[in-house]
Image (cartoon, rainbow, N blue to C red; front, side):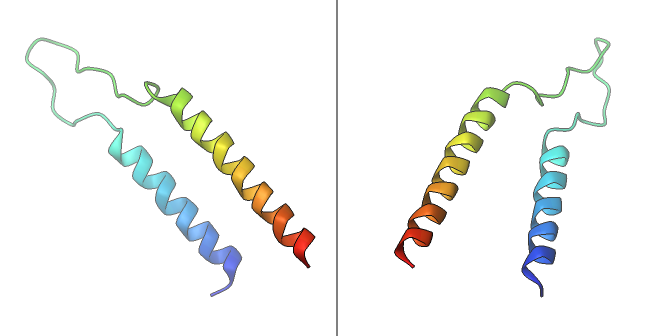
Length: 68
């Protein structure tokens, strides 16, 4: 498969798994409204991990390009 297509499939898979794992349950609780989904509870950690990963990725690309 082409690398771009593989990246697209993996990205869609991870995105859909993330939505599914943080969704609310289908049942309604006896005391009224169901609790809200924990989608936004850990967004700061996700942003920090994303920034660190991007820094690592681009730093590795720079090292590889400098060695050629």
